Length: 126
Image 1 (cartoon, rainbow, N blue to C red):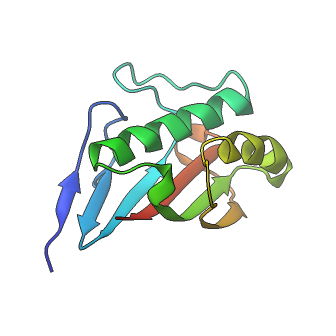
Image 2 (image 1 turned 135 degrees about the vertical axis):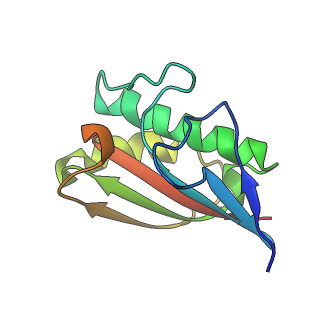
């Protein structure tokens, strides 16, 4: 098995011992992204809409670095600090897909890194 580490300065640097994404075969596994602005390290948390857009932009940057787009995404996992945020996150999330939607689950968790409200991970295929 060969694996290629995908890294871009257009998405936040990992805040722990993990890679932004790992490609193996025709699959790309993207680590969970939160609303950290690349470069500055600041959180985009004015409201849940802004936070979700920043998460999706971070994911887009990693997909782009791997030569892929949201059309290649086959599976996502959304982690929420509170399920009451579901509809607002879902509305923003849906705007990033133009054709068919990937498989997905949404999970409410007790806490997320940096006390954010949303974290999203993805699996994409060539």
